Image (cartoon, rainbow, N blue to C red):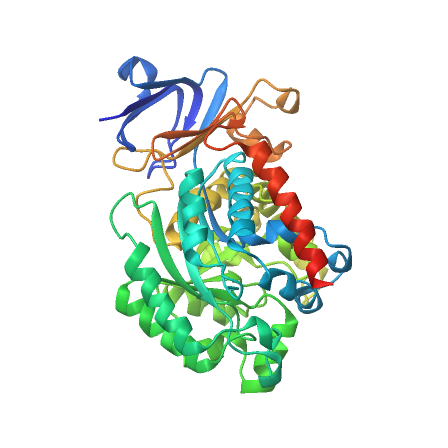
Length: 473
């Protein structure tokens, strides 16, 4: 039995049912499972691994609900810097299609390292381009090498340009093979047990890159094996026009016809939705992954997150691909979600400005509309856990996985802000993690990744990045 003690934190945020925030706190875990959280005086004083958390705030590990890890290879491409989604995708598809297993390994580790350094302990990767030998196998192997808790999609694209889809024909796969390989991935890697480090999700890419039949069969396969279902939805008006032109239905209405509304489903982005569609999500149990940085970067819009929350829709956060966000920083994503909700609140509604005459939180009709710092942190932790179907992560309490991170409070960035240290982590500049622990294993120590030689991997990654871009010209 391996034991771990994180001791003497200035404040520990539990996210338990009482939302306790414990001062001078410690956390004790055995074999990756939390045994006790509470005042330091009430916990053991020794363990196999002891981390001194003095001067730090400890938070549950963030859960990233939507990412494309291979996209670290195509960040900041000059021809994709000032485009919205569809032209942006056309500038990236063929580069992604050339990703080799070797390049994929470095991109996965680079992305996971960035995430861990920003407090993220559980990652969902929406992978769907496998034309050059890149597979779920090499992606999962890289995640195991780094040490993140990992949900991996066996994603797919099957509707090429010649058949009315967006991807080039040489980037799509045969549907029979997609389904067969999806079944293989589930049977080989999916672990449904408490504390699982690897799970498989079925993830067709989008309404404009797969057929209706593949969506239906993917949903049936996921339900047969009791795994998650994920795709992009309602990200842009281009997508909305696609479903209206091709099916005479809005995206959510169309997804209902192919059996894609249910408790095991969550959608990436979910920006352009009607109020009645939000209620429909709440009734059927669908979740939404909010990707605020990517949505701003591609000028996609602002998701109605507070409306989702008020309706009881499951909402988590995702950094999205590093080529539409250009970073993989969950602490930044929490802060951006927090701020963007306030921007949306201040926009004038169609019915006129009088509704927005008083924006003060003290105004009884406006208080619930404010996104608070603690709500933003909850979206990144408990919210994300619910979205991806986990009840063993997202909070720090007995029986949950020992997934957490700490932030040093004694920095210039927090000077004068420690009236409320927890809120300071969101209001002030996004900080790197001092320590990150996943399943009781130290992944980040004193601000550095300790499970891989990150400098060597970054050097290899950059070579692959240049080679892929040059090959696609």
